[in-house]
Each structure stands twice: as C-alpha cells, then as structure tokens.
Length: 95
Image 1 (cartoon, rainbow, N blue to C red):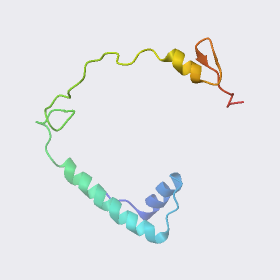
Image 2: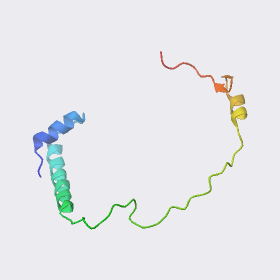
Image 3: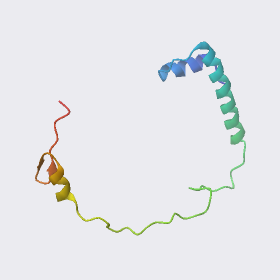
Image 4: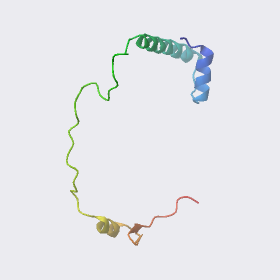
C-alpha cells in the first residue's frame, strides 16, 4: 500500500496541521515505511496463537480491598469556604 502526497496534504488539512512541501516528502517516506512494516506483519501466520492480555503468563498481585482511612467528610467540609447539607458550595462557572 502506498500513500500519495495529495493524501498527506488532505490528512494534514483535516488534522489542522501545517505541513510544508519539504515536510510532505519526509512524512511520505516515513508513512511508506510504516505501511510496509504493517504489510510485513500481516503476513505472519497467527492462526495458532490465542488472544492474550499480556505477553507473559503472570497474575497481577492485588492487595486486600479494605478501608484504610476514616470518613473525612466532616473535616473536608469544615475546610471549605462554603458548604451546606454535606455539599460543597462553589461559584457558578457556566452561565
């Protein structure tokens, strides 16, 4: 698969990126290389490979899910400039 300079200019326009004429040539070379690598990778036979979430067959050690902090709502509300009925009162930012 190849990509043309016109396609690069169109993609740059859609992405709102200013690309000079010299940069178009550089981007074209890089994209052609990337697309060639993708084509090469698609030729690899992966039919016998199952889906996996990680390259290594390991389990993530997890900690016990338990409460380590006490309820600090009252303390937090006392530090707020304005609060009412266990809610923080903030200035309106959207009209």
